[in-house]
Every structure is written in structure tokens, then in C-alpha cells.
Image (cartoon, rainbow, N blue to C red; front, side, top):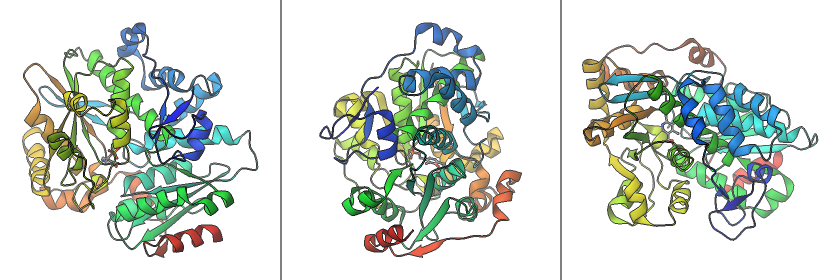
Length: 434
Ligand SMILES: *Cc1c(COP(=O)(O)O)cnc(C)c1O
């Protein structure tokens, strides 16, 4: 299957090229040229399929033309080797717990899949060295670094804003060593993202090094995130819950996650509508209200993985709906919450439902509480484990959050990172020197 650029200028490319390039040369984002619905009988079997069985079938639909089927099944099952349970929080509202992977956030899914797919393509090109550049507001860096750790023919450079990620997050990508290098930028996440985007467009750099992205710009990162939307609905079906009017609420930053859900719907997944829940970085909410897309510098919030002022995947959302604001607003509603509101939700949900949200999940939960109509069933994506934001969460609830052992292990490692100003020339020279 071919992949086309949302900007419509660059020629269509193969899956391998889309994965290795990341961003299209015309600055567009790659999209699958066609979306094939899953067969009806798949949905009949969905409630009885395991996560790995289901993922293998969806992966076959997406990538089956481009990857050896046996190896595709193997790498998909290997990527999806942790549970993603759907947990009832209260009547009509379910949490899809995406934090049971190695770095305790949903990005493990896409990062693990992409690492294995790139490893698969690299087996044919033994001398190739692919440099993965990743800008992170916290969770992408850890998921990508851990997903790619030790993958042959791949080096990872993680750029993160100094002092703006939690200590636990930082430890997950600065302590690994081997093929992972951490770069601490004296600036914001948007600065990191700008440096990475600029690197992809720099002619000299691209002639000298093979660069790709493992942000949700990359098709191999965001498309596999579709797996858990199918799994959520499958679990709802298996529980005998009403699946007529499912509303999925996605705490959103760069909009890769919700885009995967929107494509899953095009593949036949019975979701009635989506909610894109924002923190104070509510550019998309404003777009829904006004029809105008006005990116602006991000502001720091307690749901920091969503502090994005110019969401990359907005281009994909526009593309999916033929740039029609009406069509987008008919399928996606918005929500925006201040830190105070997020904190209040986190606290009250622990007190009244006994459910411990993280700040990102709290944004999603609150939007469902406010917007769910009678007869609808709500699923929100609980995108990270509360322990990743331990200080914040404990400061709000006054109760201790236990750190899972796999997270504690990172914190015992030694931090290694390179400090840098948010200056492209400095970044470029650094890369060229490696
Ligand atoms: C990355 C992230 C988000 C935002 O996801 P997008 O795909 O960028 O919209 C939300 N919550 C957590 C915990 C994240 O790590």
C-alpha cells in the first residue's frame, strides 16, 4: 500500500519509505492512501479475540501488503505483550488503561511497534544507520527510548525541555545509554519540536545522515495505536455492555492518538462520536468553536504531555474530513480544562469512585462526565500511570501513589544528557559530530 502526503505535493511512497522518512518532503504527514474496513465477521469475533490476536488481524489489514505475514504477526504480538484492560469507573464510564507497558503510558504501543517494524526493514539493509529524532514533553521520549533500546541499525536522539518533565519521566530516557542519547533543551516542548522539524528539512543534514521521527508524525507510531480502540470495544462487547452508542474521549496533545481512533472508526469500529479533551492548550477546542486554527506557544500545565501549541496531527484530522469544519465538528466535540479543574476531578474521582486518575486521564474523565448523553456509553483513554506524575498527584489527593517496580528501576540509573540552547545550528552541529 502507498502512503500519500497530506500536503499533496510529494509523490506517494512505500510503507518503508514513509517509516524511514517520517515527514514527507513537502512537510505534509503521510496517510495510508486507502482505509480498508475490517470484515464484518471480524467484529462478530472481536469480543472473544485476545489483544494479540486482534492486533495481528488489524496489522494484517494495515501493513499486510508490505511486510512478510508471519514476521508481521510475530512483531505485532511481541509489541503488544502487555494487557490493556477496560475498567469500569462508574455506571456508563469506562477507563481504558493504557499504562501497563514498560514505560507506563500509551506511547509504548506505537513505539514498540515502530521499533520492531524499523528493525524488520533494517534486516535487508545491514549497513544502514537510521537516526531517530524525537521531541518529547515526557512520555514519547521514554516510550521511544525503551522501545528502540538495542535495536540494530538505529540510534535515538531524545530532545526534551529542561526542567519541564517530571523526574520519573526524565529518568526513563536519560539513564539507558547504548543507542539512546538525551538532549536537554533550555526551552519549551515547542522548541524541541521545532528543532526536530527543522532537522528533517535541512538538506545538508539529510544528505549526511538518515533521519526519521518517532513522534506521532510517523505512520508506524500512530497507526498501531488503533489496536487498542478495537480492544476497548471488544472488551465492552464481551462484558455485555451496550455498544450502540459508544463515545470515546481522548485526552489530546499532538492529536496522534485521536487520529488513530478516527481511522479505526473508518475501518468499521462502532464508535458514535469522539471527544478531544484539552488542557489549557486548547487550540483544537477553539478551532471547533470558531472554525479558525490559530496555533500559539504552549503553556505549562499539570497534564504536561498535552502541552502542545500546534498539534502536528491536526493536518491529518483535516485531511480525513476533507478540510470541512462542519464534518469535523459533527464527529468530534471539544473540551478544555484548567489545572484547577483537572485537580478537582482527580481528587473527587478518587474520593467518590475510588479510582485513581492521572492528570491526563482526569481531563478525559471530566469531559465524559460533562458531555455524555443518556443512553451513551463512555470510554476515556487513561493515557499514563498516575505514578508518572507522583508529586503532582500526591499534592492534589494527599494520598501516596505507589511506584510500580519497573518505574522505580529507572530512577536508580545514572542520568546522562547533553545540554543545549534551542538553537538549530548548535543542534545540527551536534548531530553532524556524532
Ligand atoms: C502523549 C500523551 C498524550 C497526548 O497524546 P497525543 O497523541 O499527542 O494527542 C496524552 N496523555 C499522555 C499521558 C501522553 O503521554
